[in-house]
Image (cartoon, rainbow, N blue to C red; front, side, top):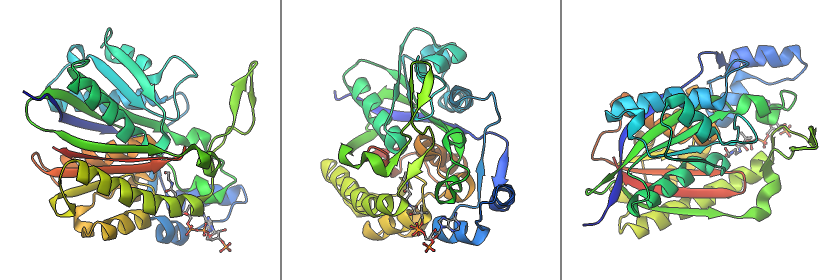
Length: 325
Ligand code: UT7
């Protein structure tokens, strides 16, 4: 009998400090940076984001999301034999945020590692966990996206600092004889490293280069709209399904205009798209599991429905994943 992997629980967590566009506009104005609520809403759909307080790390956000996902799955930490954390804002250079999370959860002993694919990280991590479950390398995985992007934002650069937020989302993925994850399609093209990056690094006890986020927004936008459609189509083809089989699109939450464009290309009405960018901003690897958990808990997305997850991000990386919830 074929061995599948299925999501058995979802969870998420947002740090309590919420900044509306108005809060951010006031804060930036004090530093001489001019922006407006109108610009941010019109160009991105973002109305608010959450920022973690000093002393809080990605593993702390991941821990809360993971606990919620385990509770929803009716599992405890001791059932988990694999933890994958997708993050570009790890607690430390090493060890991985997954190992730190494992210890905080008290789930010690199974495999634990991070995946670094920026905003595509959750789709990458879920694909790896699915493969490990299918081969029998794992039985019960915790797959998490957790980010504190507020720490790598340049608050003098209005083209990027208004876009991102902090948060975490998680799923419990378990072996099953019934189909859950149906297919996925992952890609990267390293020639686009420079259009979205944090170029600094640690060397000899010092930070060399600029450790803040740089993005050529228009270049990312143009690449994203084309690549998301091709990854979505390739994933559907692998599962022998078509656009019409998608109940819900759960896209990376970067910009409402990118989501509208993808929905149009897949002939999906916006009623079929989970949109949380307004309240979360772009939380990079956390955005898809945050959106998924929000939709599940709101009763919007239901067990048995077919979901297409998709994301693009620094690298350049992109991918899509189709599943039955
Ligand atoms: O998560 C990884 C993937 N990331 C993404 O998907 C992001 C993709 N890119 C985008 O979402 C959009 O390109 C942005 C939201 C970043 C920018 O939107 P845009 O429509 O591409 O704006 P633009 O860069 O063409 O800028 C238009 C104008 C410029 O002024 P001029 O040159 O027309 O006078 C900018 O200087 O808007 C100006 N501008 C701002 N104005 C007020 C840029 N940022 C701001 C701002 N407030 N925060």
